[in-house]
Length: 323
Image (cartoon, rainbow, N blue to C red; front, top):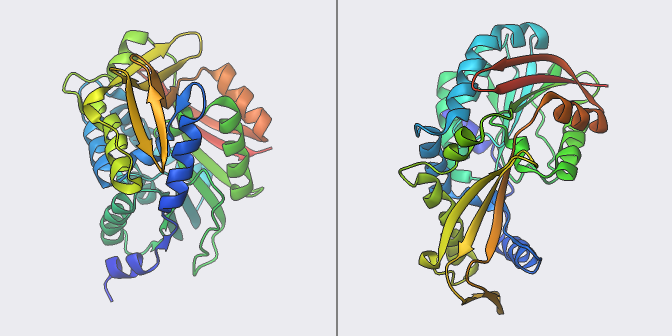
């Protein structure tokens, strides 16, 4: 059996059901202000569009983090030690993962937890070929919900959680603390976590990253409605909503909305939702951090910084340990 086939056979598939997606959407749209879970951005088309976003001239986070990783990974490998089980939350394409696994000393296994099955299998196929000595144990699931991790055949020395891309910034404060606490439990007392965080900077630079000139980010945001129409039978008119992303300097975050362009009705699961002209649906936050804010989150979650690395434009990697 090929290395790729073995990795695919090891897949734990916890893809969200239609019923769960429908319940999440109805709950979100029943709130005021209305919301849709950003988790559901990542079907096959959404994952492909996000990869395009990461390559746009305006979107600095990915290329900045990649360059920082390349610079600091020797130090990370020394701090982490050999024979670790790497667990990645929201693995996406796996570009950063390949760098990390190649830098570590004899990693035992790799468990990506990714909600997009297509993106997960594509990244595992590439990594299994590039790193045949690393056991691939993929899990298709929403990492914000409890997931039982598969056990590697070889006993690891410790777990290393990998959470790049400033994905933590997609969560409001209470959610972020809860996620960090869950990471603390998954790590165990002797585990570590390598987390990427986008730092507060010039609002013009930040806003441009979420409003690229070619409209790729707008297509990505609107694709959420296309997915819901396909998977839960809603009837969103994509031409009647527009993408809007603005930076709040007081909250240190990008706030991304889909804004209704007219008075309209949308049918979802037997319910009718009325949208006023100009009414937003909040679909994503992208928090930016400074050291004081981030350190306070860690303290509340029972974590502390073991090492930190920064680069320009302001972006950071933090190696976390349990307190």
